[in-house]
Length: 255
Image (cartoon, rainbow, N blue to C red; front, side):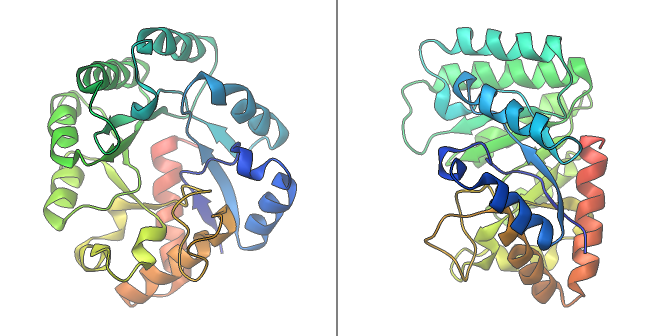
């Protein structure tokens, strides 16, 4: 079985002591590739060091997370843009809108998101989008860029079927992770109606751990539980879920 973790923070402090074992466990479950989103400049060194340590397996993105947007966001954006000009990345991200914790820098979040969408367009890269408590605002912000050809992934999707239809209608994919294993999330009903051609799998490790390990540190080996849950919902073999979603990930990232 071939699985691809389209969104994982393997450079996180939580993995500092056992990253080698974490990668080995994931590979033992069939996870062949790991895609790492940047958060801000504090994550760049560790992220790219992992990419160097696992060539052809670990791939870096470059961008600024909305929760890292503050009064100094332009400086952070200039660092990210300099990296994009310096070397190849598989995507811009993760970028987007997050109104869950704090709305102090709402306008700055919009500006940072729009700048990063333009970067992706200019460089013919996909964008990996983070949205929390801002689904409609994010969809509306993306629409004019999607009309110009922007593509990418709405990572950690947890919206309604109407949201999913709007996103896939723009040509974007949906990143589905551990939330699909939670009983009360409502995501299972959405997945029932969605074609797998619109889906990539992700863990968002170390966050959003799937059942049966919910509450513990998430890791990329647990991607298998996400694939198995989708297979159950769709009443199809897990091997088919793995094959289709992996092909979707390789196509959008170009590797």
